[in-house]
Every structure is written in structure tokens, then in C-alpha cells.
Length: 137
Image 1 (tube, rainbow, N blue to C red):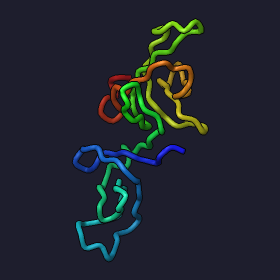
Image 2 (image 1 turned 30 degrees about the vertical axis):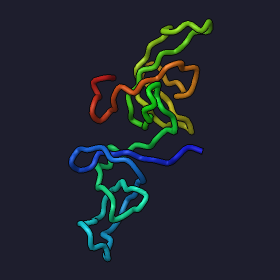
Image 3 (image 1 turned 180 degrees about the vertical axis):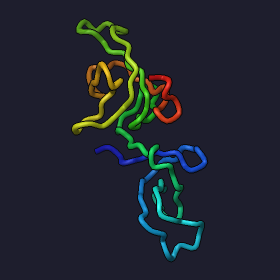
């Protein structure tokens, strides 16, 4: 079973990792910090040890890592090198974003291809994400 983990940019632009929560109202008895309604990434201790994040940057961990051991998250831009039917490398080199659709993690360019993240891909490398590097697509 894959670990459930999220990442998002906090309000200062730094990436934070952990559990994701949405607070619909201020926590009345919290005395540390200013915990207001909003989206938060927290460590295992939870509130008040949490970072307020930009909701549009929240992404979930796929449970997979790239060729360098880097965790792959939804919204990452990856480069993949597929192998052909004869086992030849560099047969097809593609760049796409990671997304979840119809019960599966996919890599897609939103135009010409959508392949399962764990298909016959020989190599996969995270090269950026859609929030900081949209020009890579």
C-alpha cells in the first residue's frame, strides 16, 4: 500500500510536504499562530504545526519514484524513455505531466498521448512541475 502524502507551496512560495487538510472555520482554542480557514499541509503532529498553502498547488504522491529516487507527485513534469518491442532504449522520448484520471496515474501532454505512469517505461525522470516550469511542456 502506498503512503499517502501531499505537497504544496506555502503562502511564501516554499514547498512543504505532509498531510493535507482543509479547515472550513478558525480553530477556536488554538493559541499558537493564527490558524484561520484555508488549506494546510501538516506533519504527523497536525495543527497547529501546519503550513497554510496555496490550494491550486496541492498535489498527491503517486507512490512511485523516478530513476534518481525522487518522489513523483501529481503535477510533476517528467521525461520518459520508452523501450521498443526489441528492448532498444531511446525508441521514444516524451515529456508530459503526471495526472490522475479514471483510477490510474498517467503521463500526458494533453494532446497526443496519455500512458500509464508504470507502463513499459524504462526510465522516468522528474524535470519540473506545472507550477514552476510550465514552459517545459
